[in-house]
Length: 476
Image (cartoon, rainbow, N blue to C red; front, side, top):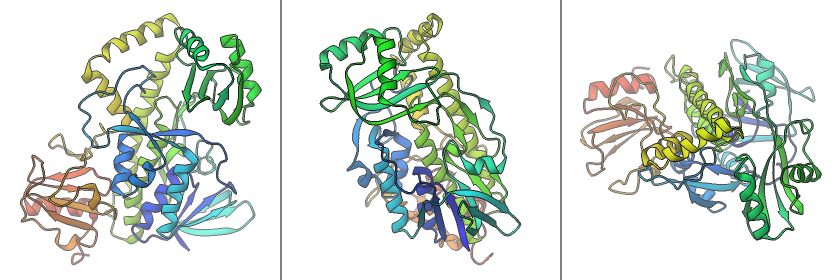
């Protein structure tokens, strides 16, 4: 009997497993594929994901395999510099091969005690009052108290769960891949510049000496479930540009549509969904993988609390209440970016207007903060603006704040040096530091780094500790 079984060992599943293991939850991750993905897709980690990785002591490890670039120019690919005033020490983008990121997160989860089984496809499941029975394709049955689908856009768990998945079907297909080109770099640059004057969806971005990231609008090119070929790319390039640039030696090739959908419910009883299993959208702005990692860290400590027996009655419900609106906002901003990337005169006029507005730093910063997920404010009730927001990393008398969050516990940051976590010390840490540069006397941080309370009154703090971390030990 496992505490939690997770379907899917991508970034979301691996991150969720690691978060659960921080609280000694027995976790099994089932991955249908026998081997990690062979293709090398470069993905971008935005500011909030970098902050969360720093909170768990993972950022330095990830950064060794990544390339840093400014946090600008990724809203609808409108070429603007990074805005000033981004409130984070991690105000940049990290580009990293997705298989490398998955490997690092999986290794982290395994080091914490996660069991991962590859070649284990989920065929069915059934839940009852005490748990979930998961049946594999080979007929083996496994049992867990909770089951989480992190199995991607074509999620088997979501389909079997039968939840609504409303939204818009795909209208436009796109080819995307990385390959080399025989045409000289200056000829490529000149041809691409001409084409992008009329079609902003087309990209032929150089990296390395002769390699390129290629994105081509390609309506109706084959079955989206079947990987495209290099000839598909060459044919579309010839049709669009009059040349195939001499493309060869592909590193990876894929096709995607612009379907935009969000599940009605992230949870049905003891079965939950996270990452692309819960929401799909075009990859504009590079938000999908980040959204999944952030789902995992929001859910992990709450599900662990449920398993460990100290969760308040409504704690697990806050996963849906907090993450569903965040995903809805991501879907909306990708819809907007899609319209701004269309080739018609109307969308292009709006794009030019947006480009002018983004010369205003506050506008540019607002859009980048939206994509980077640092402007999220969860609804924790009335209070100061900081309530419900994430707290940026700050320097302490010794070290930094995020360095104190590696264990996935709550934290009272106490500038008064007279408060206490009392009966919650088994799940919440107390840090007394009068030197920290904050404008509040004290605050309570959840394990995901969001501010759950501000003030200086012990009785009020105890109430919020009960709200988020259940009954204290003596009360229990």
